[in-house]
Length: 222
Image (cartoon, rainbow, N blue to C red; front, side, top):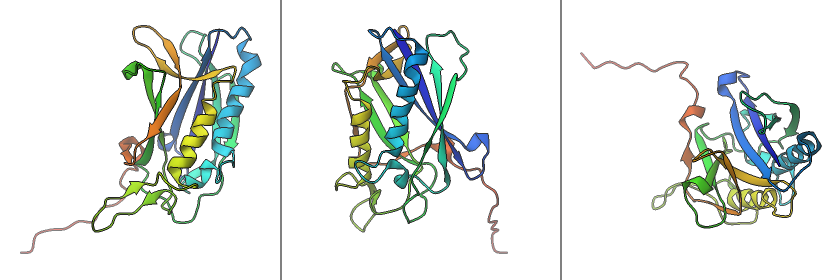
């Protein structure tokens, strides 16, 4: 049995630890007897390809805000070791240049919901919040006088189609280590990811928002 956690850490232009964004992936297979060290490179490589792969086009980096560093730190943990765990392996991924349009607010994200095989319940469901995002046509259907702004889910290069396609590759059931949802109830367990979906509504991750640096003051007229 081998269980691996990979964390993708995104720095921003501030380079401050509190402004980093972290996405966590778990991989597990009870039938695998290979040692952690023999598998971690391949697992980290799959996460790297999730962000870097250009098929389907464009790579996911093109959808991520230019405020985010293009170098992503990938750290690997052996989950069979007792806590507190420390990373035992470091690598990196390189994000493609952000598409033109400038970044949306840092709190703005798209939720990729992950599910195991039915029956689906809270312990067989996980989420990844993808962002911060670029304000360009493949990411967003802008608001009009009759419709709200929504993530674009249709079209070959839309964020919904590309993100779903690359998540499907990461969840390839033929891989030795399966991408999993980690649950700690009633005990620690790992559910292989079988499917998922993306809603056509943005999610707000308030902890990603910047602190104020100035303010515009007003007073009542005398």
